[in-house]
Length: 317
Image 1 (cartoon, rainbow, N blue to C red):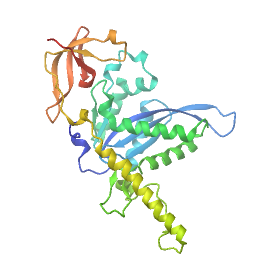
Image 2 (image 1 turned 90 degrees about the vertical axis):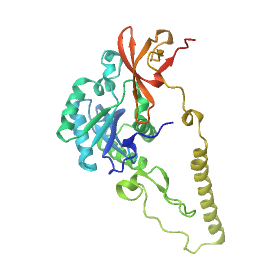
Image 3 (image 1 turned 90 degrees about the horizontal axis):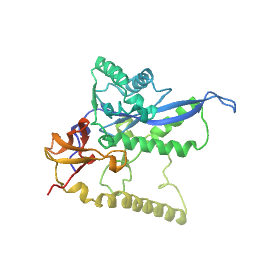
Image 4 (image 1 turned 30 degrees about the vertical axis):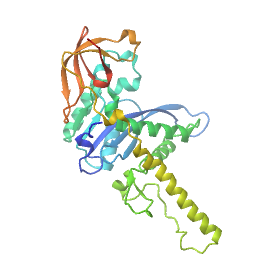
């Protein structure tokens, strides 16, 4: 597994370098009551590429204006943005009839041009990932997955108003920003973990003042229960964090065979394998570490750019 991209390890303020994506569609109602008219809204997710902090905004529809208003609310509260990263969808234009309205909107040329103009006015650089490579944006894709799962479990079958859902959205944001990243110190007695919220508010988002039970008078049974709970807490943390760090996979620790110009490859696509195209590598696009993860191919239908994980080299010997 290669080193992280440079924008992931820069020492900058939170959200100076941000990834953006949509977390899907939700159904709300205009007002309380059984006869209220349902309406559709969308969740816009912003994630800090350095601290993994998340910011959730509600967008009333799929329009450029609503996205820019969501981005304005985000940047007004989180501060100036230097770089914005998102998925690239230029390869989806020809197949727009097969895409969902959400993908049609985010990958349309009019949307991208309008946002480019808005960002240029504020000296913000917009970076696109290579086509058909959602794993390049794994950081915000993971945020989308976490937000969706919490929202589904929280709402269930209930229909919320916009105000109710916005309140829930901020609570989910606080919960996600309180997820542990790593231990703050090596002190065995310090069970506090570093969270994205520490970079935003200097403390976990969901922490509330709690009385200390250590110095309070209690029976021997209560004292034993407290120690047992602390030990159980430590054991759970050790099992989940330390053992997971030891479970290294060969796929990510050993270098594999790299692609080469002129090599014949099979292009993995979202169709039946018998319909996959064959192309010959015309150009490689190496990263800062010299490893090529993106390649431009020559196919019967013209040039094509795909990530290396979508290419299957054909044995020629």
